[in-house]
Each structure stands twice: as C-alpha cells, then as structure tokens.
Amino acid sequence: MTQIIHILLVDDDPAENVILRALMKKVTSASIELHYCETIDGALDFIRAGNPVNMVLMDNRLQPQADFRETVPAMRQQGFIGPIGVISSSLADPYFQKFEEYGADFRIDKSELDPTAIEFILREYVSKN
Image (tube, rainbow, N blue to C red; front, side, top):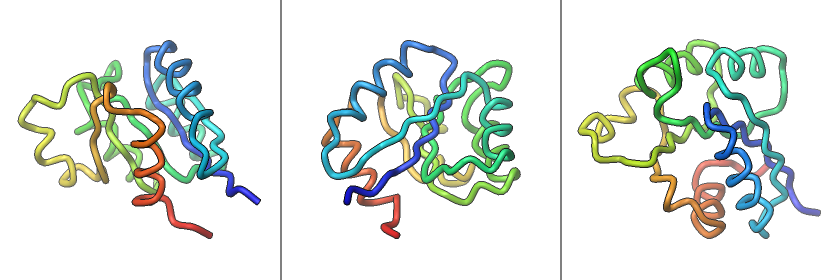
C-alpha cells in the first residue's frame, strides 16, 4: 500500500497550487495529498486545527510578511517540527544561504520542482512510518 504524505503548500498565488497539484500527481513513490493555504495565518490555523501535515512548502514571499525569515519561524513557534521547504522563483538573495538559521530545512527554486525533485525531497525529509 502506498504511503499517504500530507504536504501543506503556503503560497499567495493560487496558480502555484494548480501547478504543484499537477506535479504531485506525477509522483509515483507516494500518494500525496496536497493541502493549500494562501496566507501564513491560514497555514497556522490549519496546523492548530490538528490536520495531518508531513511537510510544508512555504513560498518565500507572503504578504504582509517580508519573506521566509518571518514566516518559517512563525510555523516553528506554533510547534510544527516537520520539514519546511522554502520555494521561490529566485534563490539569488544572499539570505537564502542562511535558510537553516530561520528554521527551514531546504530551499528550492520553483523551476526545479518536478516529480523527480519531489521524490528526492520526500526520501530525504519525510520519514517513513
């Protein structure tokens, strides 16, 4: 039986939800249930409600926060201990080099997200139960 992995996507662009949902369907090593929130407040509410989440994919820039240096620590302060990956259309800003200092486990350019990359991330960061 294929393991169900719950991934929470936090991105203020609904098109990213559509794109990632299509990518997740192409992953063959696991059955992925993608949950989606447009704001960090929505994501925090989702976590507080006790919904299952194995991993969070956090867009770098969410309003009104500046970037992941504010949103990822907010998720950690809420008690989320699972892997958090920062996704961005560009990883050029120097602060991406210190992503671990803010509680993120990995960062990836959105253009690099494909089924192979997703399978690698799942193997690396989502433990098998």
